[in-house]
Length: 378
Image (cartoon, rainbow, N blue to C red; front, side, top):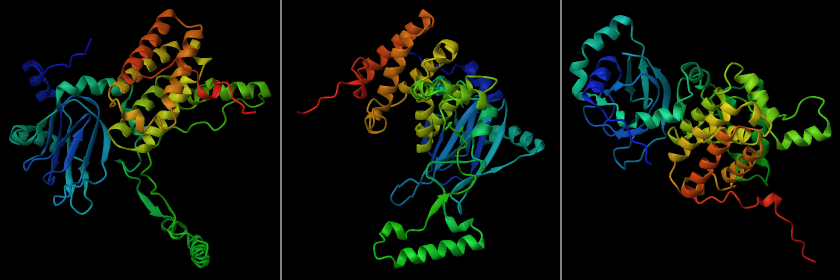
Protein backbone atom coordinates (compact mmCIF):
# COMPACT_ATOMS: atom_id res chain seq x y z
CA UNK A 1 0.00 0.00 0.00
CA UNK A 2 1.49 3.34 -1.05
CA UNK A 3 1.98 5.98 1.61
CA UNK A 4 0.00 9.14 0.88
CA UNK A 5 1.59 12.58 1.08
CA UNK A 6 -0.01 15.19 3.37
CA UNK A 7 -2.05 17.76 1.48
CA UNK A 8 -1.90 21.50 2.11
CA UNK A 9 -5.30 22.58 3.41
CA UNK A 10 -6.32 26.22 3.89
CA UNK A 11 -6.04 25.79 7.65
CA UNK A 12 -2.48 24.42 7.40
CA UNK A 13 -1.55 27.17 4.93
CA UNK A 14 -2.77 29.90 7.32
CA UNK A 15 -0.92 28.32 10.23
CA UNK A 16 2.34 28.01 8.31
CA UNK A 17 2.04 31.56 6.96
CA UNK A 18 1.75 32.96 10.48
CA UNK A 19 3.98 30.49 12.37
CA UNK A 20 6.31 29.03 9.73
CA UNK A 21 9.86 30.26 9.27
CA UNK A 22 10.95 32.50 6.39
CA UNK A 23 14.24 32.40 4.50
CA UNK A 24 14.90 35.65 2.62
CA UNK A 25 17.62 35.24 -0.03
CA UNK A 26 18.50 38.48 -1.83
CA UNK A 27 20.41 39.24 -5.05
CA UNK A 28 20.38 35.62 -6.25
CA UNK A 29 21.46 35.46 -9.92
CA UNK A 30 18.82 34.31 -12.39
CA UNK A 31 18.89 30.53 -12.92
CA UNK A 32 20.86 29.69 -9.77
CA UNK A 33 20.16 26.17 -8.52
CA UNK A 34 18.51 26.49 -5.12
CA UNK A 35 17.00 23.85 -2.89
CA UNK A 36 15.63 23.09 0.53
CA UNK A 37 15.34 19.51 1.76
CA UNK A 38 14.08 17.30 -1.05
CA UNK A 39 13.12 20.16 -3.39
CA UNK A 40 15.30 21.90 -5.99
CA UNK A 41 14.56 24.77 -8.37
CA UNK A 42 16.32 27.16 -10.73
CA UNK A 43 15.60 30.66 -9.48
CA UNK A 44 13.42 33.07 -11.44
CA UNK A 45 14.14 36.76 -11.93
CA UNK A 46 12.29 38.05 -8.84
CA UNK A 47 13.13 35.18 -6.46
CA UNK A 48 13.67 36.40 -2.90
CA UNK A 49 13.44 33.26 -0.77
CA UNK A 50 11.09 30.69 0.74
CA UNK A 51 8.18 31.14 3.14
CA UNK A 52 6.06 28.83 5.30
CA UNK A 53 8.99 26.60 6.30
CA UNK A 54 7.78 24.12 8.97
CA UNK A 55 9.80 24.44 12.21
CA UNK A 56 12.54 21.82 12.54
CA UNK A 57 15.80 20.68 10.93
CA UNK A 58 16.17 21.54 7.24
CA UNK A 59 18.95 21.46 4.64
CA UNK A 60 19.38 24.56 2.44
CA UNK A 61 21.67 24.34 -0.60
CA UNK A 62 22.56 26.13 -3.82
CA UNK A 63 24.91 26.08 -6.83
CA UNK A 64 26.02 28.87 -9.13
CA UNK A 65 25.02 28.28 -12.77
CA UNK A 66 27.00 29.52 -15.79
CA UNK A 67 24.47 31.34 -17.99
CA UNK A 68 26.47 30.64 -21.16
CA UNK A 69 26.73 26.85 -21.12
CA UNK A 70 24.32 26.11 -18.22
CA UNK A 71 27.07 24.26 -16.33
CA UNK A 72 26.51 24.01 -12.58
CA UNK A 73 29.15 24.67 -9.91
CA UNK A 74 29.65 22.20 -7.04
CA UNK A 75 26.84 22.28 -4.50
CA UNK A 76 27.13 24.15 -1.18
CA UNK A 77 24.70 24.18 1.71
CA UNK A 78 24.02 24.05 5.41
CA UNK A 79 21.72 22.39 7.95
CA UNK A 80 19.66 24.72 10.08
CA UNK A 81 17.02 24.14 12.74
CA UNK A 82 14.34 26.70 11.92
CA UNK A 83 12.31 27.94 14.87
CA UNK A 84 8.67 28.98 14.87
CA UNK A 85 8.29 32.37 13.09
CA UNK A 86 12.07 32.57 12.52
CA UNK A 87 13.36 35.07 9.98
CA UNK A 88 16.68 34.17 8.29
CA UNK A 89 18.36 36.44 5.75
CA UNK A 90 20.98 35.53 3.15
CA UNK A 91 22.38 37.50 0.23
CA UNK A 92 24.42 36.36 -2.75
CA UNK A 93 28.09 37.35 -2.96
CA UNK A 94 29.18 37.71 -6.60
CA UNK A 95 32.83 37.67 -5.61
CA UNK A 96 32.65 34.37 -3.71
CA UNK A 97 29.70 32.88 -5.63
CA UNK A 98 28.31 31.94 -2.24
CA UNK A 99 25.58 32.93 0.17
CA UNK A 100 26.35 35.26 3.08
CA UNK A 101 24.16 35.20 6.18
CA UNK A 102 23.10 38.48 7.77
CA UNK A 103 22.52 38.13 11.49
CA UNK A 104 19.46 40.23 12.24
CA UNK A 105 18.76 41.96 15.53
CA UNK A 106 15.36 41.39 17.13
CA UNK A 107 14.09 44.77 15.89
CA UNK A 108 15.19 43.95 12.32
CA UNK A 109 13.50 40.54 12.47
CA UNK A 110 10.27 42.20 13.60
CA UNK A 111 10.56 44.74 10.79
CA UNK A 112 10.98 42.08 8.13
CA UNK A 113 8.16 40.00 9.56
CA UNK A 114 5.97 43.07 9.28
CA UNK A 115 6.97 43.35 5.61
CA UNK A 116 6.21 39.72 4.78
CA UNK A 117 3.21 40.60 2.63
CA UNK A 118 5.45 42.96 0.66
CA UNK A 119 7.90 40.10 -0.02
CA UNK A 120 5.15 37.51 -0.42
CA UNK A 121 4.83 37.61 -4.26
CA UNK A 122 8.56 36.85 -4.57
CA UNK A 123 8.76 34.04 -1.99
CA UNK A 124 8.30 30.42 -2.95
CA UNK A 125 6.17 28.31 -0.61
CA UNK A 126 7.78 25.34 1.09
CA UNK A 127 6.42 22.23 -0.71
CA UNK A 128 4.37 20.85 2.16
CA UNK A 129 3.58 17.63 0.31
CA UNK A 130 7.27 16.60 0.58
CA UNK A 131 7.49 17.23 4.35
CA UNK A 132 6.54 13.69 5.37
CA UNK A 133 9.31 12.25 3.20
CA UNK A 134 11.86 14.71 4.64
CA UNK A 135 10.84 13.97 8.24
CA UNK A 136 11.24 10.23 7.59
CA UNK A 137 14.85 10.89 6.52
CA UNK A 138 15.74 13.13 9.49
CA UNK A 139 13.55 11.85 12.34
CA UNK A 140 16.44 11.36 14.80
CA UNK A 141 18.45 14.51 13.98
CA UNK A 142 18.36 17.29 16.60
CA UNK A 143 19.62 20.85 16.62
CA UNK A 144 22.46 20.04 19.04
CA UNK A 145 23.65 17.13 16.89
CA UNK A 146 23.61 19.33 13.79
CA UNK A 147 25.83 21.85 15.56
CA UNK A 148 28.22 19.07 16.58
CA UNK A 149 28.62 17.68 13.05
CA UNK A 150 28.49 20.80 10.86
CA UNK A 151 31.92 22.04 9.71
CA UNK A 152 33.16 24.90 11.87
CA UNK A 153 33.00 27.17 8.79
CA UNK A 154 29.22 26.69 8.78
CA UNK A 155 28.97 25.29 5.23
CA UNK A 156 28.91 21.84 3.67
CA UNK A 157 30.74 21.57 0.32
CA UNK A 158 30.20 18.82 -2.22
CA UNK A 159 33.72 19.39 -3.57
CA UNK A 160 36.59 19.23 -1.02
CA UNK A 161 38.05 22.65 -0.27
CA UNK A 162 41.74 21.94 -0.87
CA UNK A 163 44.77 24.12 -0.20
CA UNK A 164 48.46 23.45 -0.78
CA UNK A 165 50.39 21.97 2.11
CA UNK A 166 52.68 25.01 2.29
CA UNK A 167 49.75 27.39 2.93
CA UNK A 168 49.59 26.48 6.62
CA UNK A 169 53.20 25.39 7.10
CA UNK A 170 55.86 27.17 9.18
CA UNK A 171 58.85 28.79 7.45
CA UNK A 172 61.05 25.77 8.21
CA UNK A 173 58.37 23.38 6.95
CA UNK A 174 58.00 25.40 3.73
CA UNK A 175 61.75 25.24 3.13
CA UNK A 176 61.76 21.49 3.70
CA UNK A 177 58.78 21.06 1.35
CA UNK A 178 60.45 23.21 -1.35
CA UNK A 179 63.63 21.11 -1.12
CA UNK A 180 61.60 17.91 -1.40
CA UNK A 181 59.79 19.25 -4.48
CA UNK A 182 63.10 20.31 -6.06
CA UNK A 183 64.54 16.81 -5.63
CA UNK A 184 61.37 15.30 -7.04
CA UNK A 185 61.61 17.56 -10.11
CA UNK A 186 65.23 16.47 -10.68
CA UNK A 187 64.35 12.80 -10.37
CA UNK A 188 64.16 11.40 -13.91
CA UNK A 189 61.74 8.69 -12.76
CA UNK A 190 59.26 11.20 -11.31
CA UNK A 191 55.80 11.11 -12.87
CA UNK A 192 53.58 14.10 -13.66
CA UNK A 193 51.54 13.25 -10.56
CA UNK A 194 54.67 13.43 -8.39
CA UNK A 195 55.24 17.01 -9.55
CA UNK A 196 51.79 18.23 -8.56
CA UNK A 197 51.61 20.30 -5.33
CA UNK A 198 50.62 18.33 -2.25
CA UNK A 199 47.17 19.34 -1.02
CA UNK A 200 45.07 18.92 2.09
CA UNK A 201 41.55 19.84 3.14
CA UNK A 202 41.17 23.47 4.24
CA UNK A 203 40.84 23.55 8.05
CA UNK A 204 37.28 24.11 9.22
CA UNK A 205 35.60 22.74 6.08
CA UNK A 206 35.48 19.06 7.10
CA UNK A 207 32.21 17.56 8.37
CA UNK A 208 32.85 16.56 11.97
CA UNK A 209 31.65 12.96 11.82
CA UNK A 210 32.26 10.70 14.82
CA UNK A 211 35.57 8.87 14.70
CA UNK A 212 35.31 5.12 14.08
CA UNK A 213 37.35 3.16 16.70
CA UNK A 214 40.49 1.67 15.19
CA UNK A 215 40.56 -1.22 17.69
CA UNK A 216 37.52 -3.48 17.76
CA UNK A 217 38.35 -5.58 20.80
CA UNK A 218 38.98 -4.76 24.50
CA UNK A 219 42.41 -4.45 26.10
CA UNK A 220 43.76 -7.77 27.29
CA UNK A 221 41.47 -9.74 25.00
CA UNK A 222 42.39 -13.37 24.44
CA UNK A 223 43.24 -14.49 20.89
CA UNK A 224 39.80 -16.12 20.72
CA UNK A 225 38.10 -12.85 21.71
CA UNK A 226 40.18 -10.87 19.22
CA UNK A 227 38.95 -13.19 16.48
CA UNK A 228 35.38 -13.02 17.78
CA UNK A 229 35.19 -9.20 17.91
CA UNK A 230 36.74 -8.84 14.47
CA UNK A 231 33.65 -10.65 13.16
CA UNK A 232 31.06 -9.53 15.72
CA UNK A 233 31.47 -5.73 15.98
CA UNK A 234 29.46 -5.40 19.20
CA UNK A 235 32.49 -4.09 21.11
CA UNK A 236 33.06 -1.42 18.43
CA UNK A 237 29.39 -0.42 18.65
CA UNK A 238 29.53 -0.35 22.45
CA UNK A 239 32.61 1.90 22.30
CA UNK A 240 30.91 4.31 19.88
CA UNK A 241 27.72 4.51 21.94
CA UNK A 242 29.68 5.09 25.15
CA UNK A 243 31.98 7.70 23.57
CA UNK A 244 29.61 9.66 21.35
CA UNK A 245 26.06 8.85 22.50
CA UNK A 246 26.12 7.98 26.21
CA UNK A 247 22.64 9.41 26.85
CA UNK A 248 20.79 8.20 23.77
CA UNK A 249 21.76 5.19 21.65
CA UNK A 250 19.55 6.49 18.82
CA UNK A 251 22.14 9.23 18.32
CA UNK A 252 24.06 6.84 16.08
CA UNK A 253 20.95 6.56 13.88
CA UNK A 254 20.83 10.36 13.71
CA UNK A 255 24.42 10.38 12.45
CA UNK A 256 23.55 7.76 9.82
CA UNK A 257 20.66 9.99 8.70
CA UNK A 258 22.88 13.09 8.67
CA UNK A 259 25.53 11.28 6.61
CA UNK A 260 22.89 9.94 4.20
CA UNK A 261 21.43 13.41 3.55
CA UNK A 262 24.94 14.85 3.11
CA UNK A 263 25.56 12.27 0.40
CA UNK A 264 22.18 11.97 -1.30
CA UNK A 265 21.26 15.69 -1.33
CA UNK A 266 24.50 17.47 -0.41
CA UNK A 267 26.46 15.31 -2.91
CA UNK A 268 29.28 14.78 -0.40
CA UNK A 269 31.04 11.45 -0.96
CA UNK A 270 32.45 11.43 2.59
CA UNK A 271 28.82 11.23 3.73
CA UNK A 272 28.43 7.93 1.89
CA UNK A 273 31.61 6.56 3.46
CA UNK A 274 30.44 7.42 6.99
CA UNK A 275 26.95 6.04 6.29
CA UNK A 276 28.46 2.83 4.97
CA UNK A 277 30.77 2.31 7.98
CA UNK A 278 28.08 3.01 10.59
CA UNK A 279 25.50 0.78 8.88
CA UNK A 280 28.07 -2.03 8.72
CA UNK A 281 28.96 -1.69 12.42
CA UNK A 282 25.32 -1.94 13.47
CA UNK A 283 24.51 -4.81 11.12
CA UNK A 284 27.60 -6.80 12.14
CA UNK A 285 27.04 -6.46 15.91
CA UNK A 286 25.50 -9.82 16.76
CA UNK A 287 25.72 -9.62 20.58
CA UNK A 288 24.18 -6.15 20.61
CA UNK A 289 20.95 -7.33 18.96
CA UNK A 290 19.44 -8.70 22.17
CA UNK A 291 20.53 -5.75 24.35
CA UNK A 292 19.47 -2.95 21.97
CA UNK A 293 16.23 -4.21 20.45
CA UNK A 294 14.62 -0.77 20.25
CA UNK A 295 17.71 0.57 18.48
CA UNK A 296 17.54 -2.20 15.89
CA UNK A 297 13.81 -1.79 15.36
CA UNK A 298 14.48 1.90 14.64
CA UNK A 299 17.41 0.95 12.37
CA UNK A 300 15.15 -1.19 10.19
CA UNK A 301 12.59 1.62 9.91
CA UNK A 302 15.31 4.14 9.08
CA UNK A 303 16.91 1.98 6.37
CA UNK A 304 13.46 1.28 4.91
CA UNK A 305 12.84 4.99 4.37
CA UNK A 306 16.37 5.68 3.13
CA UNK A 307 16.39 2.90 0.54
CA UNK A 308 12.96 4.01 -0.70
CA UNK A 309 14.49 7.33 -1.74
CA UNK A 310 17.31 6.08 -3.94
CA UNK A 311 16.83 5.12 -7.61
CA UNK A 312 16.62 1.39 -8.26
CA UNK A 313 19.90 1.48 -10.24
CA UNK A 314 21.70 3.62 -7.65
CA UNK A 315 23.48 0.68 -5.99
CA UNK A 316 24.79 -0.68 -9.26
CA UNK A 317 27.26 2.18 -9.52
CA UNK A 318 27.88 3.02 -5.87
CA UNK A 319 27.24 0.23 -3.39
CA UNK A 320 27.39 -2.91 -5.49
CA UNK A 321 30.91 -2.11 -6.57
CA UNK A 322 31.96 -4.33 -3.66
CA UNK A 323 28.48 -5.73 -2.98
CA UNK A 324 28.63 -3.93 0.38
CA UNK A 325 24.98 -3.57 1.26
CA UNK A 326 23.75 -6.97 0.14
CA UNK A 327 26.47 -8.82 2.06
CA UNK A 328 26.08 -6.58 5.13
CA UNK A 329 22.31 -7.00 5.26
CA UNK A 330 22.56 -10.71 4.52
CA UNK A 331 24.62 -11.16 7.68
CA UNK A 332 22.27 -8.90 9.63
CA UNK A 333 19.13 -10.81 8.62
CA UNK A 334 20.78 -14.15 9.49
CA UNK A 335 21.93 -12.87 12.90
CA UNK A 336 18.52 -11.36 13.59
CA UNK A 337 16.62 -14.61 12.99
CA UNK A 338 19.13 -16.62 15.06
CA UNK A 339 19.26 -14.18 17.99
CA UNK A 340 17.29 -14.06 21.22
CA UNK A 341 15.09 -11.11 20.29
CA UNK A 342 11.32 -10.60 20.21
CA UNK A 343 9.28 -12.27 17.49
CA UNK A 344 7.98 -8.80 16.62
CA UNK A 345 11.51 -7.61 15.76
CA UNK A 346 12.25 -10.78 13.78
CA UNK A 347 9.04 -10.33 11.81
CA UNK A 348 9.92 -6.70 11.08
CA UNK A 349 13.30 -7.86 9.76
CA UNK A 350 11.65 -10.47 7.51
CA UNK A 351 9.27 -7.90 6.01
CA UNK A 352 12.17 -5.52 5.36
CA UNK A 353 14.17 -8.29 3.66
CA UNK A 354 11.19 -9.22 1.48
CA UNK A 355 10.65 -5.61 0.41
CA UNK A 356 14.34 -5.27 -0.62
CA UNK A 357 14.23 -8.54 -2.53
CA UNK A 358 11.15 -7.38 -4.39
CA UNK A 359 12.50 -3.92 -5.27
CA UNK A 360 16.21 -4.50 -5.89
CA UNK A 361 16.09 -8.23 -6.78
CA UNK A 362 18.77 -8.91 -4.16
CA UNK A 363 19.28 -12.56 -3.18
CA UNK A 364 19.84 -12.78 0.58
CA UNK A 365 19.72 -16.58 0.58
CA UNK A 366 22.79 -17.15 -1.61
CA UNK A 367 25.99 -18.19 0.15
CA UNK A 368 28.47 -15.30 0.56
CA UNK A 369 31.59 -15.65 -1.60
CA UNK A 370 33.89 -15.86 1.42
CA UNK A 371 31.90 -18.83 2.77
CA UNK A 372 31.65 -20.70 -0.53
CA UNK A 373 33.73 -23.89 -0.93
CA UNK A 374 37.10 -23.39 -2.60
CA UNK A 375 37.62 -25.32 -5.83
CA UNK A 376 41.19 -26.55 -6.18
CA UNK A 377 42.46 -27.41 -9.66
CA UNK A 378 44.56 -30.60 -9.58
